Length: 259
Image (cartoon, rainbow, N blue to C red; front, top):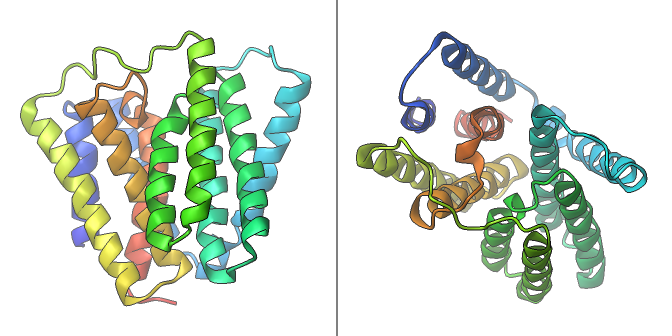
């Protein structure tokens, strides 16, 4: 119940004013989160390979058709798949504990595939907040040698963003009052703290995913509100809910004690 309330406060802080369309979007997100919380854990873990395969399929399509016109909903889908495809593999490496070079090779391929997809779709700037969260997560896992490579990849991404003539910093998100900003930051870091406490108690796939996810959300919100990034989850209401709903649903499942 606490997780559901914090998630709703997080969403409320972002939407501020409600219209019929926004209410329907929020209800759809809440239904998706609840549905995920009722799924068997194997079903959630089984999404790893489909998401990774979809990521590679998008890469192949963009490689052969780099100038295709991409609608906004498709751009958001690319960001969603890129995040969860890499996140699912990242969580899994902690359980498998493979050789360093195998982990680095697989993570690098996925990172470049996701980065290429975001670059072609014009959403590469989303990779910055994701990469910062990834570096923090790898530091917590003790994968210090991989961090240097991810940092180098991030610098390459920043250079490509510059080549695209995309402004990294902008005027910030307009229309947010100070209280809304504090609520966004407070609730995102509160969910991050709860998810961290969960992995301390039991280090499982369903506990690690919400932690990494809310780490990414907290970093993204901080960059948009504190650093005035020109792009982020807060600029895309549907994408914001699409990222939050599975994380909240998985965390509610974990806290509920179901296998």
